Amino acid sequence: MKDHRTLLKIKIKSLAAEAKIIRKEELNCNNDLVREKMYLHRINIVRTEARCSQIAYAIIREKDLRKVETNPATSPDWKKIYDMCKRYGNVDAMKLSLDEFKVLWEPLIAIQAMNGSEKSREIAA
View (tube, rainbow, N blue to C red):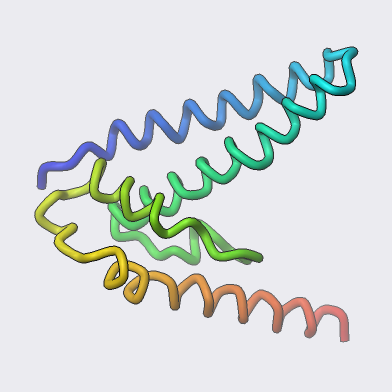
């Protein structure tokens, strides 16, 4: 099996390190405007990219997505995940179109989201 999952693993580790560095710099920053920009970058860009990378890595490794995302509140960026799977995964296995890819994987995320909301209702009761 020829793929480049090691490169994706490096990307995941780099994003985790970037989030740590930004968080540390946020604490040391005296300028509120700059601190807010760092925070928004960490939350909106780095976190989203890390989430998509983790899901793509799980798909390439043929792992259960429930181990990656235990209680997703939102649907991930399937286009980004699809592109990562094509770039880093087994090229022969990725002969699916984006729509076919979403049909294959999106129900797992939706089921997990529903199960998570049911669990939170059970806990509240």
